[in-house]
Image (cartoon, rainbow, N blue to C red; front, side, top):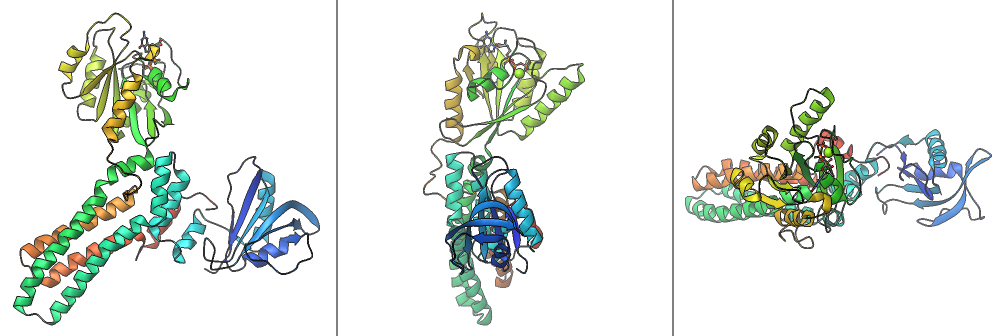
Length: 456
Ligand SMILES: Nc1nc2c(ncn2[C@@H]2O[C@H](COP(=O)(O)OP(=O)(O)OP(=O)(O)O)[C@@H](O)[C@H]2O)c(=O)[nH]1
Ligand SMILES: [Mg+2]
C-alpha cells in the first residue's frame, strides 16, 4: 500500500480521550513532524507510550501520549501510529488536520481493517466479524462475532474446501489414467465425499436463520387496530414510557422502533405501528401503509385484539394480514368486561397461539416474553461450541456452493463424465472461498468495508 492514511478512531463527542490513528509507510515520519517528546530520548521506542506534545509549528496543540508501532506486528501489518489526545471535537480534529497537512490521506471507511485483510492478517470473514463486534447489541451477538473473529467459521469453511481440493486432485489423477475399473471405484468414494461436503454445508446453513436474528435482532412488529394497546405493549416490554399512550384512537402516527433485550436473548427490534384502519387523514394513512410494509419484512408479528369491544372490519383485516406470518396473538383489556373470549378468537385463527393480557395492569406480558423465547431460542443455539453463520453474504455463498455440490452428486449418480463433475466441484470450492475472501472482486470488497465506521 503506497499511501499513508489517517482517521479519528474514537467516537466524536465529549470524552476523556480521543485517538487519531495513522497507518502506512510514512506514519512514523509524519507523526515525528508534529510530536515533541518531553524527555531527551531521541530514538523511537517501538510499541511504548511516549509522553509529549503535538505542535503546530511553535504552537502547542495538545498534550498527548503517542505510540509508534512498527510493521509487521500491528493491526494493519503496516507501520502505525496512535495519538492519544484529549477527547472532544476540537483536539482530535486539529490533530487530524495537522496529520493531513503533513502528507497523510483521510482513510476510507474500514480502511484500516481492509489493509489488515489485504496484508493477510485477517481473512474476509474475520474482517467482517470486526464490523459485527462493533455493531453488536447484545452479549450473545458479541460472542458470536468474537467466535468468527477468532477464525472458527474460516476453519470450518477451510475444512470443507480441503475435502473438495482432495476430490479435485483425485479427479485430475483419474483423467490422466482413465481406466474403467478405477473410475467406478472412485465414483462411489466420490459420492461419499460429496455427501460429506453437502452435510457440512447444510449444517452451517441451518444456523443461518438464527444467525441473522442474532446479528440484526428479531424484527418484531406490533400490529392492531387503533387503541388496542400497541404502544402500551411497547412501553411494557421496554419498561419505560417510550411511546405516547392515550385513549384517543390514532395516537401513534408513524412507526416507532426500539431495540430491547429479553433475558439476554438476541435483541428484539420492536416496532410499534400506527393502528390499522381506513382513514381520511393523510398522515395517518401513510403510517398505516408503512405498518403493512413492516409486516412484510417482519420475522415476528404481535397482533393485538381488544376483548372489550366486538371484532370490527379492521380486526378481520388484520386476521387476513397475519394469516401466513409467524404471529403471536394477544387478546387484551381482559380487566374490562369482555365482548368475546379466547375460544371465540381461537376459532377464527385456529393455528396461532393466543395469550390473554391486560397490558395496562401488567398482566400477561411475561407470558408473551416467554413465548417469544420459546419460539425462537428453544435451546438450539449453543453459543460456545457452534459456528453460527450470521452474515447474509456468507449465507448466499453457502447456498451457491450447496447447489454446486448437489449438481456434482447428481452427476456422479448418473455417471456423467468425470470432467463435468469436476467443474461443479471447482465451483463449489470457489464459492466457499469467497466466504474467506479468496479471489474476491474489488467491488465486493468496497461494499463490505463501506459498512465500517471511519477509523476502524
Ligand atoms: N383497560 C385497559 N386499558 C388498556 C389496556 N391496554 C391499553 N389500554 C388503554 O388503551 C388506550 C390505548 O392504548 P395505546 O397503547 O395508546 O393503544 P395503541 O394501540 O397504541 O393506539 P394507537 O396508537 O392509537 O393505534 C390507552 O388509554 C391505554 O391506557 C388494558 O389492558 N386494559
Ligand atoms: Mg399507539
